[in-house]
Image (cartoon, rainbow, N blue to C red):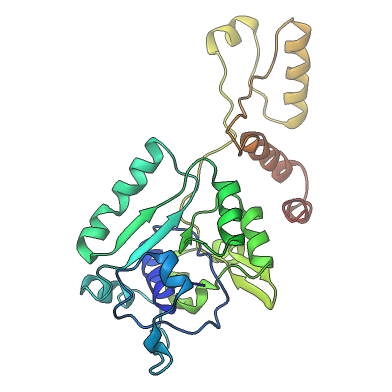
Length: 274
């Protein structure tokens, strides 16, 4: 279980738009002292809260707004604290992620240790089941996140980020999408850290023009073009979906786009929830 200290740090990191969502136990856990456990790795801190917390419980977290946890971090209050971050970044993306937090680490003395990789979808479940959850995780699939929310493994970040602050950072629709059903009701499962342009269709323009094809603007036109290319003896689509244990995600992205454009939002939501 993670300490209250690390969840405070979570709010700070969220305010800096570094991460998506936190993993760990319920929000009613005993807070840990912010003293001599600061330099310990997050896994050890989570499993063994500081001994002196029973005699002197930590205060409730400060209001989670701009300039609260951030100012405390910049003042060096959390220096030496290790925060583990899991996610799907690998290779060049991992290098970029580490570079993106370097200035924050230097300014605060907080050690952000990235432990993720291409096997994230499998490894995050193993870590949570083993009681070794990371402090912070970046979930590329809202459906996978929803599973952890339903099992009570996600902390409600609205406890650490004030509503007015969040409304100043995001449109309400983004905040609504972050709400997921936990064992005791809906919680804000995280914040949206990044988004990607997906489902683009690339085509060989010279060959396209030579064949006299036109860009379709409706679903029916797309199907008709598909049939025409087949009739002309060519293969209309080439899609790469291999990605290790995450193989298939590119295809599901396409399915998302197709469903959002051809059916109702209710059907889409039902699909993502299984």
